[in-house]
Structures are given as structure tokens and as C-alpha cells.
Image (cartoon, rainbow, N blue to C red):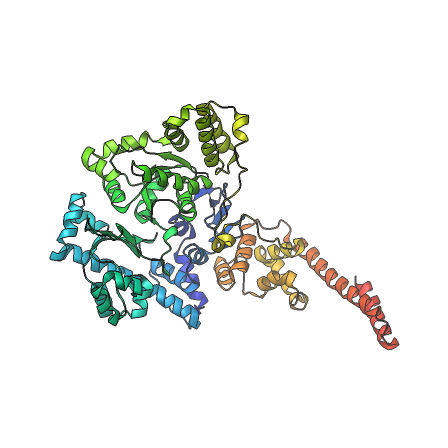
Length: 603
């Protein structure tokens, strides 16, 4: 990890108010002197994530996450510490000077920075091609036919990938990017045998150059993160007769995880927060058309259905609001809606479904009938369960007892995804009324509600289990040392190093006492937190978020004496064990016995 001087860290933290920074990612609600929200680091139904503006720290009392503003950005954006500090330094206009990095951190940090820079330049390159180059006329005509003129293309930085094998490659090389960086970005591909056979002689000639452009003859839509940095691309093919996929997305890279990004969120998150409602459409052009028509609370997944991670991201913005699915009016659109519901209901989000006219999508409807017609459809969107029942009831077999029972099973399968008991019962009552079956009969079809299994890589982050609690005595001493200057001074006057140093149970207290920390100085809080490993940082943030002890000096005295008593008892137990050794010579026996009696007097 890079060495960043404490005074620089203090400057970065002081210049980035934690409420403003976290509030830029998802909404915070004031609760007295604190701000609260649903935790972004684990699944929960009631807010346990707290932000303290006085101390400039955050803490989740559900999963244990905690720290200062740099820690939050590091964990939320999955950055290393230097990258998080640099991001906040840039936000505040602070020049950041770093010391030496470990080889691994240095390589990762440099590659991440280079990939972000490469994607930004690639987006400008593609946009320049679209706006200026004669060969891009086919792309301009296509966009014009979809109602997207130059001004809208400029607003969304839409571009065009030339119909060649090396345009992007040569542009990047000319701008100083290495072959390794290009390959890591996903903007180029290394040909394999199958691709070479499919592409014939053209690909064969490119093998000599080792790699070729991944996007060719496509309209290019930049995919941005919450900070409006380009992290990937989605390219739409222009040739209607092409055998290639209609849309191709960048592969997953160091800066892009497909299932963890929502297209358009960097532009729409404020509107989503304000309305507590998100409209979900299928593709980039649908989203852009809707947004430019004045409906700004709209996003699109990178694909046709939500992932669990995308649902958790959206939950942070709508919280107790709703998600309105607006997919195409065909069998594929219906399947996409049903697949999306699995993730959304798992987050206890209210889901409605817009029913589009046959053969229409949001883009075509807005261009042919205007934004008002689309808004009317959104307003009239049905609750997902009513939507699902209507589709099941439209089938001929629904009129038969067997068909009705099959429909009930299908509905029960979906309702079983709801983990909130109140919402689950309300939905179940409505469904049993619509299906005209008894509640008791329907309940037998339900599966027991249980949280969805997270992917193995996310298990640690998604658990609701609280961290292992501190020993009560150690915890009280830690609170006294963190909140009360007089109590801290008293403890430091005791032989604390000797008592605490080799005891794992008191390791956190040893860390607190070892630090140059002053309870009345918020700047020293952040210097302490910045020096810790994540687990210690989270634990100390939690202690800082608690109320100070009413009688800290008295508590510190009592608890310290209890630690001393524990040390004496442990030594006495060890002496008794040694005295039971039959091979002990008399002189050793007398010496150990005298020590035991002395300790007993001390106790």
C-alpha cells in the first residue's frame, strides 16, 4: 500500500464531507444527528447503515462495515486505498503525492488508471468517427432513423467503431498504450483458431499482429460508472444481414463487471431518488429515447434481466419505492420480466409491469405517439402479480381444474421469493382472491421464505450475521479510551503494554492505546482509521459511533482491575498445572508454590 502522509489524509478527509460523498451514491435520510440508509454492503430490510457527520465516519451495525470517507469509497467502488484517496483528492482539487507501492498494488493501481484513461480516449475516438468521418454515414443514418440527432449523440457520447480490423488498435498504440493494456481493456481480441476459420483470410493476416479490434462497424454506446467514467462499451451491429450478435458488450475487466452496472444510472440516479421509482427498459436506445423525452428515472440492465447485484444497487436508490419493468411486448420480453422479478422481489421491491402494444417498444411508441402516451402506459402499469395472473388466465387450459392448479403453483413459486412477511401476505391474499382458491390451500404450495444464496465471491459481503462481539470488559475500556480524554490518560499511565501485548482478546484495545489519538480531535480519528486493516477499522468505527460512557473514569478503573485479575487467574491456573508434574524437583516446587501464594494475595 502507498504511504500517504497523515497530514495529506487529513486534508482529503476534511475536504470531502462524508454525507455529501455517500449521498452522491445513494439517498441518506436524517435521523436526529445522524443519517441512515440501507447498507450497501449486505442485504437488509431495515436501515442499519449510519453516517455520523460530526465524526465524519460511517458504520453498519448489521454487517460491521465502517470507517471514514476514504474507506467507504474504497469498499463501495472496490478500489485499493491509493485509488480511493486519489479519487477523493481529485474531487476536492488536492494534489496527492504517494510513496512507494508494493509491486502488486502498484501494478493493479497503474493498470486500473490506464484502463480508465484508455476507455475515456476510446469513447472520444469513437464519437469523433461518428461525427466527422464519411464512413460513419451508415451509423448517422441509423441513429437519425431512431430519433437520435447529433446533440443527443454528443450528450451520451455515442460513437462509431470503423469497419476495419485495426482502427482502435492503431489509435491506442499511437497514444502510448501497450498491447497488454489493450488486451486487458477488452477493446481488442487475440484470435483463436475458431475465430480465424470463421473470419477467413482477413483474420489470418491479423494473426501476425497478434490482436485485432473487438468492435467493428457498430454504433458504440459508452457504459459509465456512478462517477461518469467510461468503463466499457456496448456496440450495436448496423448490417441487418450480419450473422454477428445484434449487441456486443465489453468483456469483464478490472474496471467492468457486467452484472454490477446499470446503464444510464450516472444520469438518472437523482431522478430515481426524487421519485422513489425506477423505470427499467431493455436497451440503450430505448433508455436514451425515454430520457430525452423528459422521463429521467430510467435505467437498463446490461442484458435482458436483472442480476441479484443490480437489484441490490437499485434498492439503494428506490428503497421503499417501486420498479416499473418496461420490456418488449413479445415472448422474450415476458421472459425477461419474469427473470428480472426473481432478483427484484428478493430485495422486497414493489414491481409493476408496463404492457406495451403489440409490436411496439418504448422507443417506437414515443417517436410515433409522443412521450405522453408512454407516460400514460407507465402510470397504468399493473402490479406484477396481477400481470402474471392475467397472462396465465389468458391460456385456454386455465378454464380447467388442472390448468388453474398449475397457475396456482406458478404464482406460489413467484410469491415464495418475497422475504418480507407483511408484503408476502398482502400479495398472497390478492392472488388467492383472483384465483378463487382458499388461502389454506395456497399456503401449502408456498416454499418457506429464505434469502437467496449469494455467489461464492459475494458470500462475505452479503451475510446478515453480525461480527463477533468484543469481550464486554475490553469493549468498555475501548469506549473509554476512544471517547474520554481523562480516562484514556489514566489507562495510558498503567502498564498497559505489558498487560495487553500478547493477548489476542485485547488486541483491538492495544491498537487503540498505541495510536496517537485524541478523543477531542476529529482529525486524529481519521489518522487512526487510515492506519488500520479493514476489520479493525470497522470495529473501531462502530465504537466511535456509540454514545460515550456516562462515568468513563470509574468504568475504566473497574474494567482495568478486572483485566489484571484475569491475568493473575491465568497465571495461577498455569502454576497449578505445573505443580501437578510428578517430575518437579522440590526446589522448583517451593518456588512455584510461593509464586502461587503471592498471586493469591494480589488477587
